[in-house]
Length: 47
Image 1 (cartoon, rainbow, N blue to C red):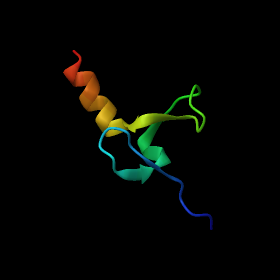
Image 2: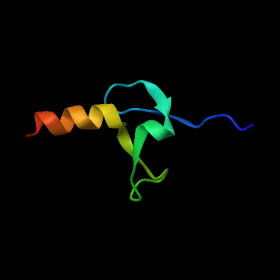
Image 3: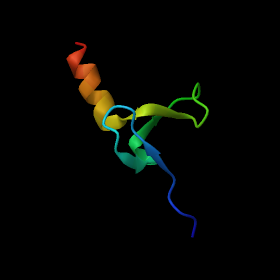
Image 4: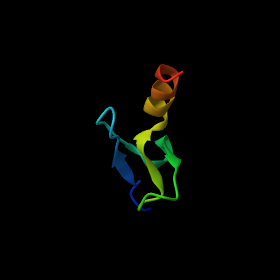
């Protein structure tokens, strides 16, 4: 069974599974630079 792919969130700096990141076709790995949890926090602060 292949190892789960991981990525470091650019906001909280924690290593998380790729499933914790939104899909983004403009990025080289097709995932957003910050995790879903941090993205929700950023969106709330910007409202």
